Amino acid sequence: MATERIYPAGDGAIAWIEVNTDNVGTNHYLRVDDPYGSYNDASSDALYANAGNVDIYTMANVAAMGAGDTATDLTVYLRIQSPIGSSETMQVSYSLNGTDWTQIGTNIVLNEISYTEYTRTVSGLSLSQGDVNNLQIKIQRTAGSNDIRISALSVLVTYTEAGGSAIPVFMHHLNILAGN
Image (cartoon, rainbow, N blue to C red; front, side, top):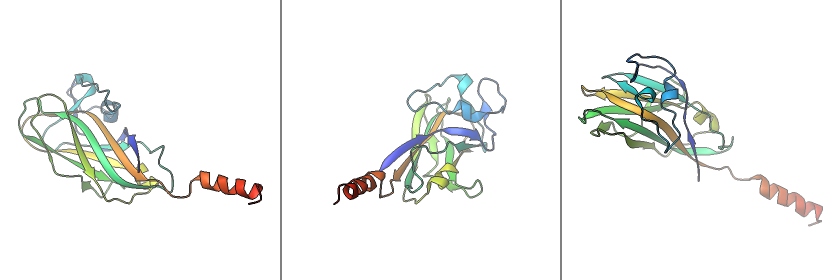
């Protein structure tokens, strides 16, 4: 098994609000694409949502996963908070075509005043490199009356590498050249 982490590379639908401007704005993916473990939680780099708001992110293409490899798990990492600390909820879903959405895990119930990392995993998949390169993540505010904020989003792709790497072929050619 191998893994590769990917980040938002574009916006689908956007409805969340920029914390520092109080406007919907544009380029939301730039506000949540912080490298894993190096977060910027400043108001100028975060978004918030009211009930029902949805943001959709187009994820970057996988670079390490090969054309014959198969993705088996997707783990979504979110850095989010509920500034009031009340039971706000949100839903995380994925799509490979922008139309059919599958919820990942249960709704997230936020009770943390400070930013906290939450994960949701979907396992047992059989996705090609092309499937993963079409991945979109939808973050939807589902319940509550107070704002929730997001400052980072990434997806850890777990995949199985295809058999028959170049090393055995190379060794085979060496054996032919050696007369074996």
